[in-house]
Image (cartoon, rainbow, N blue to C red):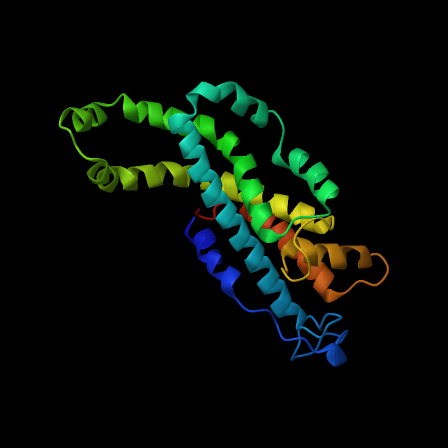
Amino acid sequence: MRWRLACLAALLLPDLVLDPFGGGLGATLRHPLGTDDLGRDALLRLLLASARSLGFASACALLALVLGLVLAWRGRRFLGVWSAFRSLPPLLFLLPLAALLGGFSPAPLSLLLGVLISPHLEPALRARLQHFQHSPAWAAERTLGATWPSILRRWAPWGWQQMAALFPSAWLSALWGEATLSALGLGPGPGQDSLGRLLAEELPRLGSDPSPLGWAALAMVLALAWVSAPGSSIRT
């Protein structure tokens, strides 16, 4: 989980400098993957776009976990509504809406992804909360009249551990949701580079005019899929 949260810093990184007169260069020692059509170093662009996508997914996952916690704590009256939302993957809601609106900018997309992922996290969070609310420790807190600030200070580490266990799945849903929309041209515009936008530009060229950047982007996707697999040995 720590390395995923560290990627949040990539959302603040500046864009690469454009050099249209140096675009389309082949691989050299200075540019191991060449340059793209706008003269940006392809390797640096791949790393920046991937890091931004990971940071975007981390932000969405945090939002989804917070919303899922609120639903689990206070949303028992509307369990039927959350069950309906859980019956379909988030992308089946996002794709027609994005097509209707002509795409999403980063802020609305992150909000929608967080909202749509949160009902999928609610059952697991509710099970953890119910176990906690029926514990002697929680009963003692209420009996002794502890204030909410003191309760939060004491139990926040425990709550963070419960949320951290669900973070990878929320992160993966947000990552592939953004990448899929961007690859289809329905995600953030050119001003917000991401792994999905890079794939949208490079994948169609692999069959006719393959570039090192296209193959590297494809390899990056496969590496992320392996790292995110349930059986991966990489610590979350």
